[in-house]
Image (cartoon, rainbow, N blue to C red; front, side, top):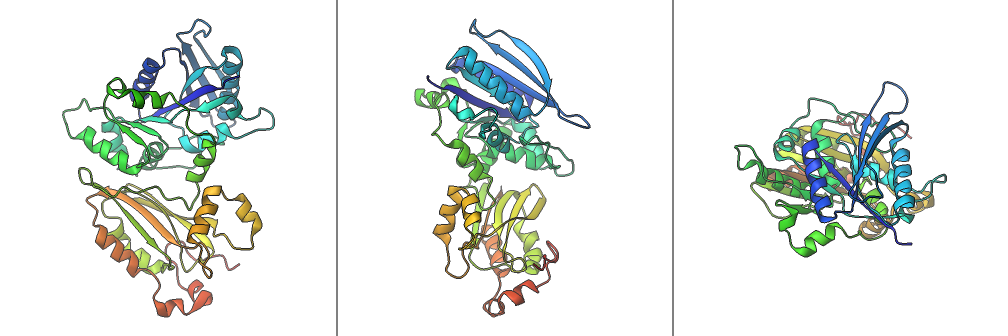
Length: 394
């Protein structure tokens, strides 16, 4: 039996989510809309409210709620729709307090009790709407806290800037409509920032109806199989988003790489230069003070978080290689050094009028010198670390 098609929609405001849903339903009039909201409680599972509608007579408009795991509830809903309506096209509209990429990984993960969603559905491109005015405010906001549902729990507190850029980075298609505000430059600026944050996504700045037939058809076409593996790989700590080489309305990206460990003290001193004008930064570091740790670099707005997120792969650690995604194993083989293995630094920074040369020079100056390298591991781990503190002496 043919599989159903699942289109996932997200957006930074309720209005833009509704606009994107309307655009998709005009392209696919028989599509069924499954709209979701999640209300957390002080204790226990949240309340998951769903609204179902469709133009087909076989799908009755309905609204209902349940208390439980949001992923489990939505999987049950989707499976029920598939059994009752055959090869249906479902538009799943997620609320703004969902961390889209990890949520989708959990939604598609095979489970013993309910099987694999991919046996019943193929995934269409993930479409994210960006309301320009709210987006431009959010990417600069770091003094508040939000918590997003990640498919397992309500995750740790994030800044609105981090939540906004994560949503954009999850998209396969970004829709940034013209702004209704008096600032005519706001929508083009938001589009420029969003397209630099997610260079792999297709950017739409006009109505879908005005796009070419192939562009419209691609939104209703399943993406290649195994997409959940690609989603997981994008969450790997060694995965760095692709950086655009061009500048658009002053928005540009800088990519820096090195195969030499960083001195944490000199890196701390370099941060004022490196972070100047940065809207988003993602990457991983090889700190001499923690030679076995993959330290992730994650910044949104003026906030920077460095975290020990994983361990570097070692040639004889078969379990770690087996647990790594195919994409990480490929990268490790590509970058492998006989002495240092996969260890390396890679950071992608996006911002407004970045001083790329100054950023690269500041980061290069933070690398260990040849003399410091000669001290070996014992000397490296003795270096004071003002960024992450003393490492575990294991």
